[in-house]
Image (cartoon, rainbow, N blue to C red; front, side, top):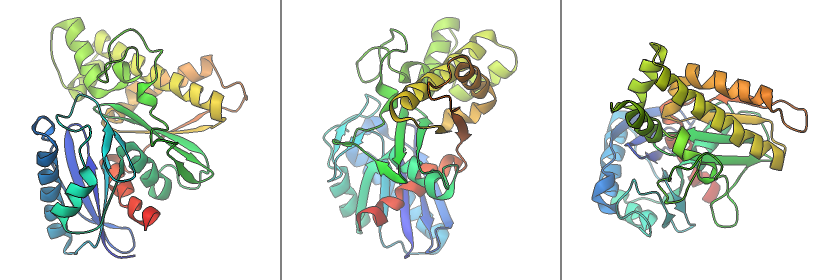
Amino acid sequence: MYPRLGIDIGGTGISAVVLDGAGIVRGRASVPTPAEHGGDAMVAACLQVATDAAGQSGLAPAAAGVGAAGIIDANGVVLAASDSFTGWEGYALGQKLREALAMPVQVGNDVAAFVLGEQQFGAGRGIENFFGIALGTGVGGGLVLNSLLHTGEHGAAAEIGHIPGFGKRHCTCGRVGHLETIAAGRSISARYAEETGNMHSTKAVAALAREGDEVAAALFERAGAGVARAALMISGILDISALVVGGGVASAWDLLLPAMESTLRASPPISGNPISILRSELGADAVAIGASRFISRHA
């Protein structure tokens, strides 16, 4: 396999990795996401991290895979996205990236990329059927069935962050009660500000929870319980017993896991087979590494 580039376009950061022919990361770079400046600014940021990562690696990638937030069609057009990004919906991301990077580019959903990365190199190795949930700026999901990524009829399979039944708050997509309203990083931060009058990052709210702040601890408990309930829905429909959880919010694993486990103990799957909760092994590189696999899947 030739050297290739993987790019992760997230709600707060854009990162890139360069992998050698053996799939080993040789270079990486990241910049803040210019989400409010539109698609062209996002492409310029992708070019910057791609150039920096390639320079660090000493390799010349021959193709790029890109994981982007939102529903992406086969041509790399963003069909739907949250309000985190300005001018994102309808943007011809694939075409613009091919022009900017001057190489073949395959674009897909960022959480689908996360799942592909974990399947080959991380917590999903050797598991034929599993569901992945990424808790980042938003909440996304990805599904592997019979060892293959399942994207659905319209590329929107496994959009677990946007299923209702998790309260009455409005989601960034404009609808009500989605999982994202309690389990996304920005939601945890916003809820803490609402309840205390103090605005903090999700990481800071996690630190407060560990120091005994009851409001902060309750928010992570609610998020963990919500993720477990989502896993039970998935298990009830697809009879899947493995869940891989990643994303920036998962860095507060010590706060999320007890709530996830207690919820699953209280309401076990009807099959009687317990759900295994697995933490992402690739960390911040998961989406970019997985996105590099988009290339071979569409070659």
